Each structure stands twice: as C-alpha cells, then as structure tokens.
Length: 206
Image (cartoon, rainbow, N blue to C red; front, side, top):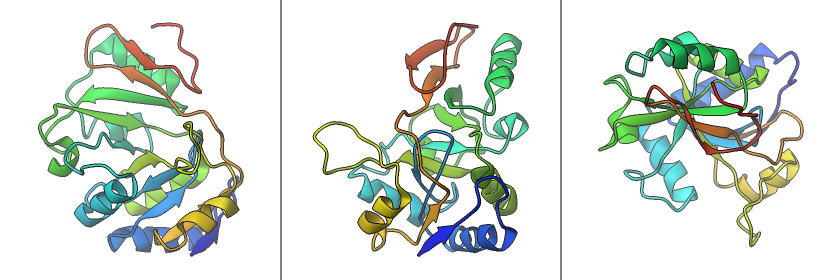
C-alpha cells in the first residue's frame, strides 16, 4: 500500500491509516528528516523480527534506533542524563542526530537484549511526529538501503521504494523525496559526548 501524506500538513485520516497498521504489528517505510526508514511499533515483537529479516540481521543483535516526538519522551526510556549532555541534546532536537543513551527498563527487551544502551532520535519531520503522536509511543527507525548497489546508497524516490518493497512491508508512505545522508550518531552515555558517525547533522562539540 502506498500512502501519500502531505509533509507540511499531514492529513489526519491518512496518518490514522498508518497508525492502525502499526497497532496490528505492521511494518512501514516512512520519511524522516534524513533518509527513508523501515519502522514498526517498539512493542511489536513480530514487526521487529520482520525488519531484522528484511535487513538480514539477527533480531537479538540488531542495533535498532527508535524515534520519539520530543526530548521529554526520550526521558521515558533512558537513565538520568547529565545536565550538560541534556542541554546539548535539547539544542540539537529535533534534528538529524541519533543519540546513544543508557537505557532504562522501559525499553522493550528485544531492543535492549544484553546491551545497556539504546539509540534514540527526534526527527524534524511532520509526518513522523504525527504518526508517533497518534500511536502514543515511539517507532523503530532502520534506514532503507538500496541492496542492488555495491556501495551504501539510500533510496530517495518513494516510487522506487514502492517498486522494491510493495510486497515486503504493509505500507510505504510517500512524503516527498528523501535525503541521501544518514543521521549523525553521538555517544551520550558519558559526561563527554563522542561523535561516532558524522552525517547530516553538524557536530562541533558541546
């Protein structure tokens, strides 16, 4: 199913279609403020396993990120954040950054496994925010990569994504062309933030 949603003013009825799919263990492909991503509810064991299979990963070892609506929602899933680190995260959100943080017990076991950390994003994308708001909790984010390419390339055209994934996922959201640069990954588990991967977000230190 291809669902077109206005990126500036997401239509509530179309967003609700997506939310209903997610509530029923569905897997979607949706736009973020960086690249298009595979997603499901963070509480959907079936959905997470399906995404892992699509990515050819072991569900128990996959490093899935999830997307929150805002910084206050992040605090529901992580241990207390040092004040200087919190201020930096607040300054950078919403935006093209993934924050590695110390997970608390609210993170579903399949996402946490034997790790004590979790990757969390607050994407600057109206469609994503509306989906999470109506769903009531975060969704998984795992970049959609063009497997036919010899190098890591990301799909930008929703029509191309639809051709490749229409029989593999439950819905593909057309929210306009995506970007080709993934998020910047910042390790925020200690007092000093470390940049693990420089991507779409600029990083010049705290």
